[in-house]
Image (cartoon, rainbow, N blue to C red; front, side, top):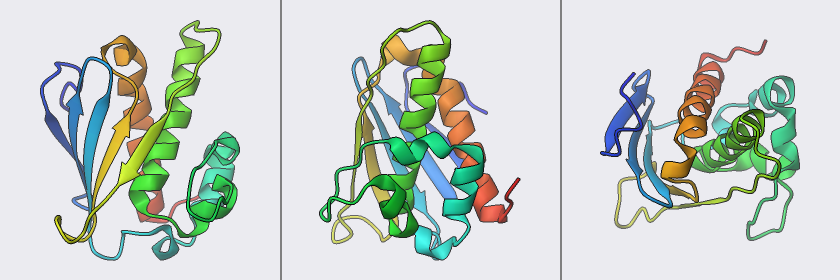
Length: 157
């Protein structure tokens, strides 16, 4: 695993199904996520809701801004994989920041895509965490990647 915190862009792959390019910044971290065909939307991984309910049920309480104003617990059943990854990352970031002694934690992010400009399955995630969150970002990313790997392996613990 490359050091995600040398503050240069780095790449990370999960079974060649998801490829991440991470661009840490002073105040924000940008992630480009590329998904393999057949793994672009959570509809393609029907155990997503069950896995999250088992491993990270608190993610269902996160606020979600979408065109239908659905809560994330509804949106997660048919959303883009990068949107799922964003919510999982934000949840783990909160958990790690609280565990490190922060009293109140607020993190946010946004996921966008333009498949007229980029290949289908390419997403751009921006998280409002930067250098001050080095100690939380690394374990949050690893846990989020581990969860995605469980999804594609179709494992529910």
